[in-house]
Image (tube, rainbow, N blue to C red; front, side, top):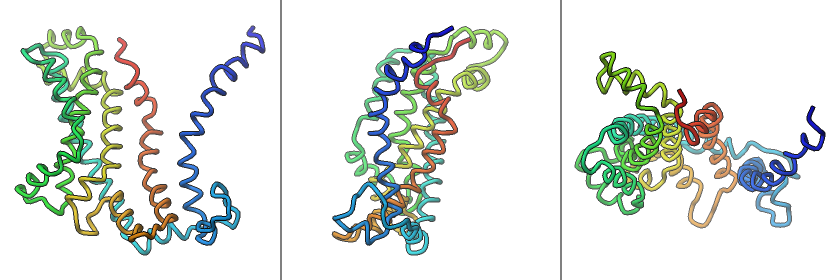
Length: 281
C-alpha cells in the first residue's frame, strides 16, 4: 500500500512547479480567443480590463472574416500548399536520410552536417535567388511557386531529423530482410519505414507547421488576392496603414491555429515518441 504522502508528492514536486510554465504558454492563446470575442466598444476602451469579457460575447469578427474578406480561400490555399510541401519534403527527406544513416561513403558525415547548415541560412537571404528561379520556371503568382520554394528549408530539416531517428533503428532487422532477398529500396519501404513511423510523423508535423506559418515567401512570390495564403491575406486585409482590426486579426489567428492543434492532438503520441525514442525490437 502506498502512503498518502507518496500519492500527493507529485503534486508538489511535478505539477505545481510546471504550472507557471503551462500558464505562460497558454496565456497568448487565451488572450487571442477573448480578443476575438469582444465587441469593438469594449475592445478599444482603454478603461476596461483587457483579460476579461464584461460586455457580452460577439461573433462579429468571425463574420467579418467570412463575409468581407477572402479568408476561406486563403485558408484552403494554405492547406494545399502546406500539405503538398510537407509530402514532397518528407519523401525527399526519407530518400536522403536513409543512405546517410546506413551507407558509408567518403564525406558522408560532412554532407550530413552541410544539409543541416543549409537549414540555418535565413530565408531573407534566399528569397532573392529563389525569385529568379521561380520567374525562370514561370511559376510567379501561383501556388506552385510556394510548393517549389518551401522544400528549400523543409528538406534539410526533415533530412536531419530523420537521419538521427534512422540511426536508432537496429541494423539487424534490415540485414535479415536483405538475406531474404530484399534490395535497399524494398528494405526501406517494407522494413525501416514501418518501424520509423513515429519519426516520419514527427518530421511531417514539423514540416507542416513551418509551411503553415511561413510568411516571407508567400508575401514575395504570390500577389493576387485570391491566391494568398492565410498568413499574408489576413495581415494585408486587416492592417490598413495605422489601423489595426484587432478583433478580426485575433479571429483569423484562432481559426488559423486549428489545423495545427488538430494535427498535434491526433498525432501527439507519435510526436513524443519520435522526439524521444527510437525503435525497440
